[in-house]
Image (cartoon, rainbow, N blue to C red; front, top):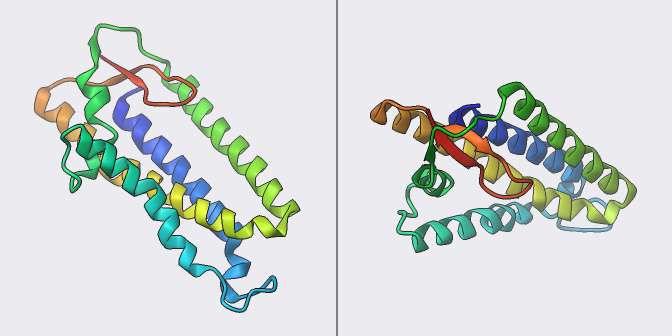
Length: 170
């Protein structure tokens, strides 16, 4: 699987999980559940809890904070090896979709079972949405741009359970 395809799919999956969580937490926005003010304000810390650490880690590595397309891509591309094996696209695609379904189902079951977790779901949804959009709208285009500039393909060599995938080139 190409790294750009992976970033677009993973970003889409994170975005969908974020939307599901936002919708699951939505009733409290109108002040329900004993609250008089609602918790719409949780969108801001939800987004910041993802974007600020990503930007700070990027800045520490010398990546401009204003270049979110590089936050998740510079390190794996810099560490890319040549000629490694490539994960089959179909298998990895189904793994990402399966993980999304499992994460979403488990989390939504917890939210449905405990109405007090709705503010947490709402904030988490915004965090997942922010991460997904960075990957989908900034990282994936950046990878495609680099592939075009360098006349190469960045391919997924290995994807750990957590963390950044390992990349290879042909």
